[in-house]
Length: 94
Ligand SMILES: [Zn+2]
Image (tube, rainbow, N blue to C red; front, side, top):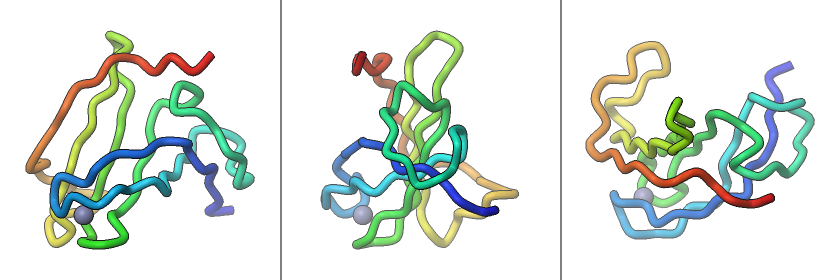
């Protein structure tokens, strides 16, 4: 149906410094539920201010990889190279 869930996650955009908080995921029921980052393996959004693409993916280690892409280089079928990545520890929401 092309729906998604909303992820409770907030981060400073490295492209412009604004706080970005409207993350989406399609790993859950996709009925516009609010979910915690630990409930899904992947979530993403674009920065409302500068358009950079921010994506978070769970790694096998349990850490999460944050990847930041410049908007003009982002294509979901050809993601290219993120201009910045950052590993963070697993989320402890439970
Ligand atoms: Zn930004």
